[in-house]
Image (cartoon, rainbow, N blue to C red):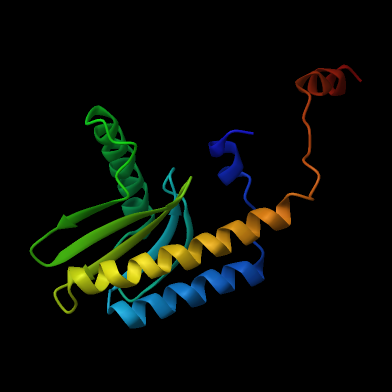
Length: 160
């Protein structure tokens, strides 16, 4: 199974979701950021916490994932294997996007009530801990049998 299929088939239990949300909440209180989202590289929100209700997290996640993918292509053009994070600075709000593992990113929205240094410090710790949570989720799913789908079955179904 390739990396994209693996993350798209990731099934997160309520218990795992609560653990992710709890950890993102802890990250926010330590870093003083406005919002933290765990997203996959397609932009799907896996988990999120924050007080920035004026933002459209679904759209921001999709665009941030696209920006991160574009940045990875730039890294390759420059002879780098990857760039592990990107940072966008605005007048009022800023984005920090960290690569956690193969298909998962940490997206942080913050303003001038904290510093980039604080966000980077706690984001590094958060990425390590969130990577452990994702690994644990994937380990649980190794034993779950995968459903196989045969498109010929559809044709046979409609013949009856």
